[in-house]
Image (cartoon, rainbow, N blue to C red; front, side, top):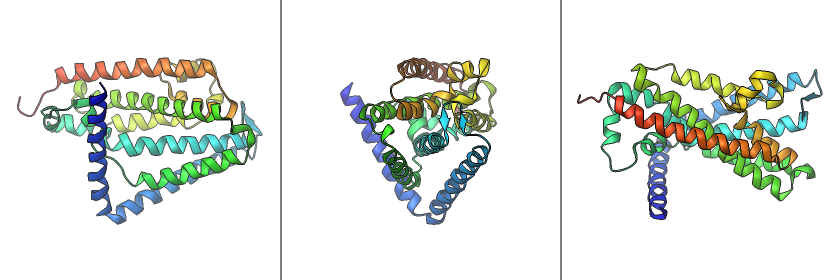
Length: 266
């Protein structure tokens, strides 16, 4: 088990090194991607600044809380874009074109290859900036500095990443059944919009859906709650439970999908 983890970590580091070298050869694209991120972050901040010009709180989230929530949302987006997005976005193309054959014949786990092959290295710059910004916002308010808050936030953050990965991956795998599911990327993006709002705005059936069937509230809102309000064990344990279920489902969907896959040689 340990040897397998070390092997795959070493393989990912090789992927990262190769893609970093490639990305640095196209500096204009590298810089352009950073500009796109800045516009995306600015638009979301402006959206919530307008809302808070009319209201004082969104459920439990104050204006200061939402600023931290937004940075956490941007962090979640940046980490996901860096590790997974560039890979899963092309999954439909691999399946339709038959290029998935080249992945499946390699002596590594196929799901690992299609999920981690490419790294968007430009996101490192955004990641550093966002981490520093979050550290400043947390440092300016002593209520957020508790060690257990920070530890639970980090834990919850990566659990949230695994949930979003599972949803996005299973959405991409629908191409195994529909043969050409080009709307998968659009559908995933629409799902993600639910994660970009504090969970306190959702009520009734929609709120229950956001915490269970389509658990987008677990991606950014629950990590933010861990940092802002301290241990919320019901949220955390629920998040862990949902993550396990969705990761297992992603594995099942992949294995069943591979059996339905019509390779280029068939």
